Amino acid sequence: MKARLSYLLSWMLPILLGLVVSGCKPDADVVATEDVPGTVVPGNFPEPVYGAEKNPPTRAAFELGRSLFYDPRLSRTGEVSCGSCHQQFVAFAHAGHQLSHGVNDRLGTRNTPALQNLRWKPNFFWDGGPSNIETMPLAPITNPLEMDETLDNVLRKLNADASYQRRFKQVFGGNGPINSYQFLRALAQFTAALTSSNSRYDKYARQESGGTLTTSELRGLTVLRQKCGSCHAGELFTDESFRNNGLDRRFPLDSGRAHITGGLRDVGRFKVPSLRNVALTGPYMHDGRFTTLEAVLDHYDHGMVESATLDPQLRRSGLEPGIALNPQERQDLLAFLHTLTDEQFLRNPQLAEQ
Amino acid sequence: MKFLKYTTLFLSLLTLSAAVTSCDDDDSPSLGAIDMEFENVAGSTAIQLNSTTPYTTAAGDQFTITTLRYYISNIKLKRADGTEFVQPDSYYLIDQGIESSRKFSIPNVPIGDYSGITFTVGVDSVRNVSGAQTGALSPGDMFWTWNSGYIYTKLEGRSPQSSNLNGGIIFHIGGFKSPNNTIRTVSPAMNNNMIQVREGRTPEVHFKADVLKMFTGPNTIRFAASNNIMGGPDAVKVANNQAAGMFTLDHIHGN
Image (tube, rainbow over all chains, first blue to last red; front, side, top):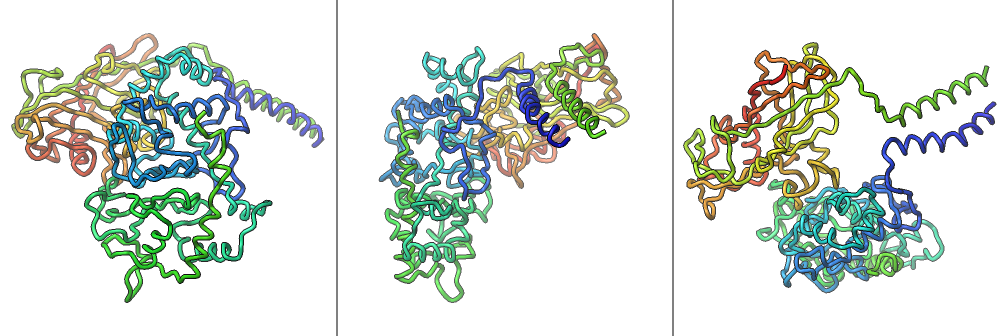
């Protein structure tokens, strides 16, 4: 009997599920496509915040999102695309730029963050202001120091382009003009695909071929987990918290998380960034003040200053705040950090401008 | 027997799937509708954008209005026995500049008598962080991009009392995170009125939204000191004023 039941279910269930899913509205052809990058959760990663089910990847939608990401028409002047400041070869950070660089050579107030593993982020930016990957791009698009454009104007430009009209229709169906929902959902298909999970460290963690770490790198991993791991935690090397890491005594130019919460206890606290591809994502810190990893380690070892909101984990009784690193630990740590470089991600032709 | 059991399971699954997929095109006789109208006023004066005649707050500040928009959401209708009709996907953006936005219809309301109405002035916290949305919640200039969330009420204009450039006043009331949560839910007094929903008879519920009440009530807002509010503790003060009496039920037509 059991066999009979499983037989019945084996052919009935797909039909039933199909009926349930198809419902009343004949949606556009939405079929998950395995060859869209970043669709499968890497074996050593936690569950994502923005799982594939929230915006099921399709080849056409991903490619549409990629076109939008690299389209300078998203800016007022038609000169700055998302990809202008988020360059693939440095994990979608901005190479050689301390501060973000917008239309008419306007300089922003913060260091452009890398775009990677965004599916796992509960919020975005150094201050965590935007809370959803879909609406996040509205901030740089409308910021006068970045792309300085309005959402209405972006939609106007997209709707004036026959190729976009056709491609949006292919993805979303319908006969209306391209709307903000479609634009933001398509863009999120690309930004959510930016998964970096194939560094040498990852292969080591998943016990895959090519996953060999040297003894120095392994010692560096131990140092990292012991001395940095409470903030740069887990496989994503961040706990997504906001912390004051002793950069300044006061924060008159940028109050960090307090800019969002208005709380005094959040003054000088900034998002703990991931360390993935960290060898390439310099300059470092929210204001890009350190150009090299060595300078960053110097800061943690002996460069920190006191302030009211300094993270308690960095305080030491009877000593200046900091994390002591002896020369061997420092060398090992630097060696390990380089194993987080993911060449496959940095060179994936699917993520490049076409 | 076992076979029977499986057959039953199979048939019930089939029935379930039919129930889930059916489009329910039947006009259900037990459902009606309610029309809602929001009339924006300053005291006893109907609001006109860019009016040359200023309005005067309870504290004596004068102002005119260039933009007035607010969200009404999560509408609930209460029956005398305490049970409720909760409108699904209930989000409306009232815009003084768009006449059609000030009237809308709530469809599929079970026929019956409703003795109470409750709605949110603003947008519930979940929808503030739900990503790209459609309809009234389409992202636009009622959405803060740098600190995700909707602006629940936007009133912009001018006041001779404002110290702002060109005498501007800007009130952007929004925010859903403690301690600066400005989501407010109101239940305007019905004064023993009933909303009677019947087949073929659609009552029209007429509300007044008095913008003067944004500046008086638990907190007196003076434009000399407060003229540029974008969320934060000052927005909470305005939200508390709004909750205390901005919305009143004026009358019900068509009962």
